[in-house]
Image 1 (cartoon, rainbow, N blue to C red):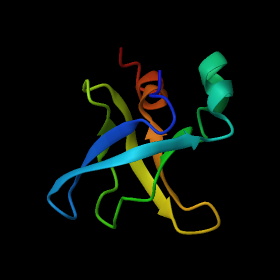
Image 2: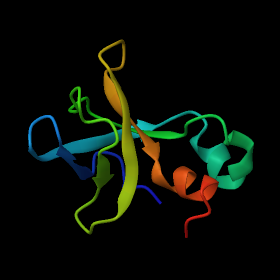
Image 3: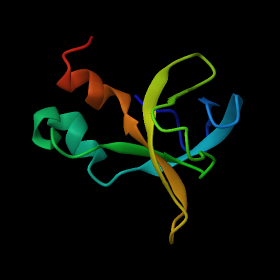
Image 4: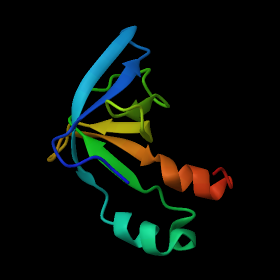
Length: 100
């Protein structure tokens, strides 16, 4: 599961040495396909997207909600057309590595 759009989510910013709160903006176009057919996207990163609050050095940081539910790992940030930070969806990582 992912938190609702515009929900607060948090990550520890290694580049700033503190907890950062941001908002969920959306998911990658292949997100639903990953849920219904997880093996079909083994070589494509399925991502959730937040406001672009990450900085260089935050790659790999975990993002979670107020209850501590883990949703993803920092992947990249773009300032292009739709500025956002992309987070590799944690369940896709767990599935590939057979983590329950």
